[in-house]
Length: 402
Ligand code: PMP
Image (cartoon, helix red, strand yellow):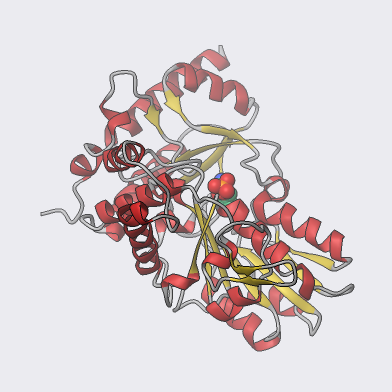
């Protein structure tokens, strides 16, 4: 018996059951959605009320808080108080940057890296600018990895924040994050550590208590969940330090003309009516996911991508930007062929992939490219998808080389 049944998994995705479905190889941008999410969302909008407001909200509130519990279990957070709903990884990272602004003084140092997505790179660049802090951008080596020695050298008593990407959306590279965190804790124990887990959440079984970072950010839509929902998690002691970025209803306990008392976490950082349908839907997705062996599913998807890499290498003039570890991401160009033209021809043959800078211009600069093509595989992809890609590629290359 195989430990992962891709056909069973694939059958859960309504998009893939349609005749017009593309060969979807863009799951690093956003994953497809399972039927359970659609069912849960419909059920919510067929019901009445909000959460945490009225007596008639009790059932929705229970489902809503159950999603928080399922999320806490999924990432092994210390408690549900450490799971804060946001609109996505981007908002979660911004909430940390804004929430720590009071802690930053001129000449403090913020460390990021060339491997960062713009959600991290731009946010911390702006934060450094606003607080007159110094921004240090760590270089990555030829395997797209941050080296411990390089990090060690950058750390100082002035290091206030180190914000790192865990798994790259450009090359699929996984940073040796536990080792890097160890280096930071030893050399700069005063620093806050944030991990951008937007990609990691879909590929690794995160155990945030085993890792020793302070903050973790991810989006639900990368893990088969809804758009417009993300999570900020981390150590309760670190989350407690964050000033709220948003003020309003439900984040306050007592309000008078004289005094405002905030609620405890997680509510203090969740002002306003939340995205209830998305939260409940994400809980349904996590429930559904439990029936599959997550690691076996990942191995299966990685197998497809690794096969593609081997086969692509037989093509003349191809250049691959591979992660040092096997991964679901295939990042490549063909020398002498415009990647956008190739993407257009592939798209016309119903292959859904990504071309461009992948919201990571500093990473692309490091690779030395203005643009790359990217295929990203998920456990619902099949060997037939791979064949469809190569058939489309052959035909596109023939046209371009005519
Ligand atoms: N970081 C990484 C590595 C990502 O891949 C993404 C999404 N492409 C983000 C951050 C931002 O996620 P979102 O747009 O869902 O907020």
